[in-house]
Length: 439
Image (cartoon, rainbow, N blue to C red; front, side):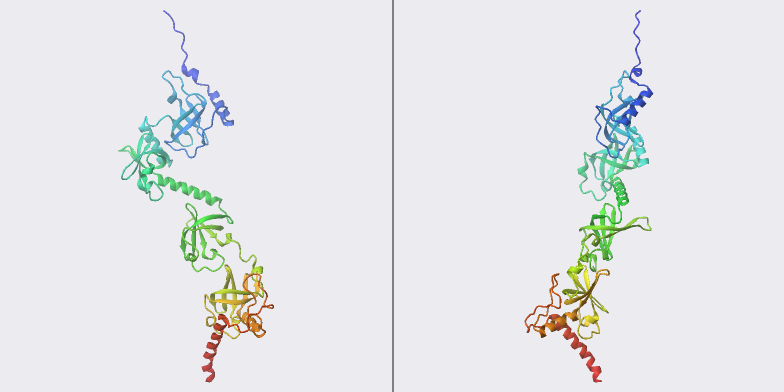
């Protein structure tokens, strides 16, 4: 009777010792193995996702694979043994596998389709932990998308495909997408998915990240989202809005934001402050004008004392009239400087929107104030007419000539519109006093 030579156990030949596996793992963590091509970096790993991994270590029962994530994935060697127990994978080999678990330890397998029940168990785990799952859209019905997740059948309603209205859901057929599991129907062995919730969660995470990096003084571009009487809401990023108060829209008075802005306008803003509201939501104060050049930076050159300027009456108050000389630059004509004679009420001599000429009396750069005088401009006109000189001391350009050195228009030049208006106002004022004096 012949004796067969002893047959060695395949497991004894293929399984390295535990300490050898630990050494291999440690060596891989210190540096990449030569000759092994690292796979491309992955983002979020989801249950059901198909990934490519490179075998970097083989232990007694598991293989370690580099999938480009923060840590290595594990695959059970039982999936890679031949009938005689020998392994059909080797170090450095690249494998296409499916994600069974996506927790602290990523677990891979060649397929989920062979065991739909196992896929449903993984989907229940994903539902409980709020972990995204990857699935291929296989069809479309009246209610939404039909999705295959590792051999298990799922359904995504139309309202849950996008963050807004989905105009053409057929464009998603054949694509592999990520979803959140929102419900499981054990009786039908199916489940309900939502891509919308996953997109919203990603937006919220991005909003928190951007908000954490935002600080006062930062300048960035935004889009006008909504206009209110008190200001303009500007969208800085999906889910991240700030408010530009009406006083921060531009240099100069703005009656209503819609006078200078439109919804959808692109604007450059500066962050003024970030506060937390009563609802624990961030309140971001923005400024458009702070990101623009300050018109007062060269005010002494543009509007020097003694210069004759033109402007438009912006508003009337009891003590005088505010006159706009340039965008963001207003001057004040005191009631005593409106006309050569006494004016009881400012509105008797001036109206909002009226164009006037005045002499710059003083400029206070610290308080950003300009004092103007219409009376001085009229006096200069009369003096120039008496001496055959000009009535206009200068134009409103920076190179204007001071009032002491006018150039003459014709002596018989007609009176200006402003002079006529002031003369009529004086006559009305004298007419009101006449009946009282006759008594």
